[in-house]
Length: 202
Image (cartoon, rainbow, N blue to C red; front, top):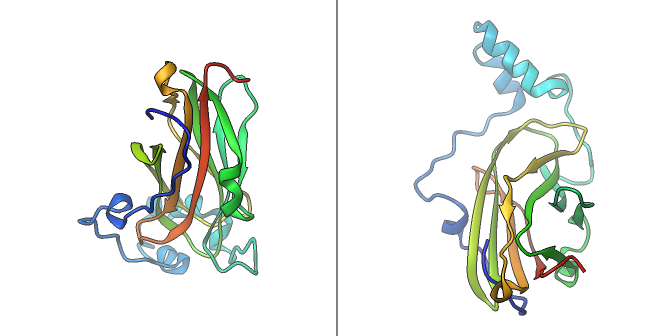
C-alpha cells in the first residue's frame, strides 16, 4: 500500500490492468463434463469428487433469482485483536464510498472477500485492488483467488498480510477501486470504497 489525503476518486480499471493480455484461459467446462473426463484415473476421480462435493450430485443454486455464478457478498478489513470492519456488497454499492474505514498507521491487516458460487464451477478467480491518493494511483495489488465449486455455504478468500502506511505524510484518506474477476474475464463485481489512515484508531 502507499500514501494518503482526501479526495474520492474513481478511475476505471483498464482491461490490461486486470487481465494478462497474453494469457489464454482454458475452455470452460460444466461440472458434468469435468466428472465425465478421466474416469479411468481413480486418484483423479476421487480428487474431483472431493473438490466438487455436493455439486456433483445436484445443481446448487443459492439465489434462484440471480443468474450470476459468483455473487460477492462482503468485503472485510481484518486486523488481529479487533472486530472486522465490513462493507456489505449485496446492496447499493454506489453508496459504499460514504462509509469510511479508519485504519491505524503501521498495523498489519488483511482483506477478506466473502462470496457465493452457484450453478457451475468458476476458474481462476482474481481480486484486483487499486488505491489512489488525491486522484493519483499509489498502489495496486492482484491476488489469485483460485477455482471454486458451487456450494450452499458462503466461501471466502483472505489476502496475505499488508502493512498500512505510517508517518505524518501517509495520514489521510485513500480511495480504492476493487474488482472481482476470473480467467474468463467476467467482472463479477466492481466497487469503490474509502479508508483513512490515522495516528490511532479513534
